[in-house]
Amino acid sequence: MAHSHIPDPRTLRYEEIRKVTLIGSVIDLLLGVAKIVVGILTGSHALIADGIHSLSDLATDFLVLFAAKHAHREADDEHPYGHGRIETVATVALGVALVIVAVGISIDGFERMYNDVVIRHGLWALLTALLSVVSKEWIYQYTVRVGRRLRSNMVIANAWHSRTDAISSVIVVVGVGGAMAGFPYLDSVAAIAVALMIAKIGWDLLWKSLQELIDTALEPAMVDEIRQAILAVDGVRACHMLRTRYSGSDSLVDVHILVDPSLSVSEGHQIGERVRTRLIEQVEHVADVTIHIDPEDDEQASPCDQLPMRGEVLERLHREWREAGLDDQVERVVLHYLDGKIHVDVFLRPEPETDRAARASAVQNAAQRAEDIGDVQVYASAL
Image (cartoon, rainbow, N blue to C red):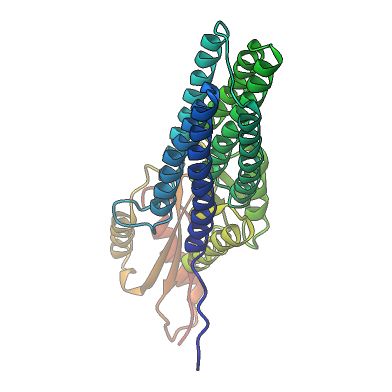
């Protein structure tokens, strides 16, 4: 019987990022070479600089490919939360690159503002720059759609890096056209204005990624979506200490959920697992969830923190029962840590006698003499 192979979502995601980035790399290489050659032939320094800018995009393309490959690796012993932050660091680097590009365009614009530009065969320079505008705007639109669909800030940042190349080509069109019309300063004015816009885009990407690196919470609307999904699970009475953070394109969630304190450990665990699977399945960006099960609200502090553990409690209880001559009557003890006290359920050994109530009362009274003990419930049955 043939088994269908379901591709790993991480692999599919990496393949999409790889495809869009490789397409952009080919376009960057062809445009960069074309603009440099035409720039040399026409004497357009702006076009030569724009060609160098296109070739510089290749470096960021390779950075994206490297980060995408390693960010999609599975979690391991050294990186138990996965490698998503590699993508975040790469986005920081791309944001810095955009800011540097903006500074470079500004400096070049100020320098060329005071120099006359002489263009030979300006039509070829204009056509080359226009081709660059159309090509880079197309790759921007394609890349940014993929980035938004994959929720990858790194891919979106690289898309904007492509758009800066389109914008710089617009500057070349304005500059070449202005020089041909006798207004060379138009090139510099446009360059400086666009550089400011590029700098803002780079800073926004850089700032958002830096916030992610210091574990800033998700946006309030996304946190509320997660909270509502948790509260919709049967058995969850409330939730608190809900903490969220980004890891690349994924979100990580930590939460305390309040359940009925009388539930068994396994039922409380089952409710917690249902919360975890519902968040991962229903909230698209959530990749991992850590859940703490609470029998009472401990958001400020647990009132039971200072109470003794089971071994010490049983020692106190059995001491009281031995002194009352009842120790051999006890079969099983269940402890409940609630409201700063230890509440006890005692299950007695079955006995062939009729006065079970008296035996249960004696065991209860003895247990309540032990320190830190709250309510005591005794369960007795006949053979």
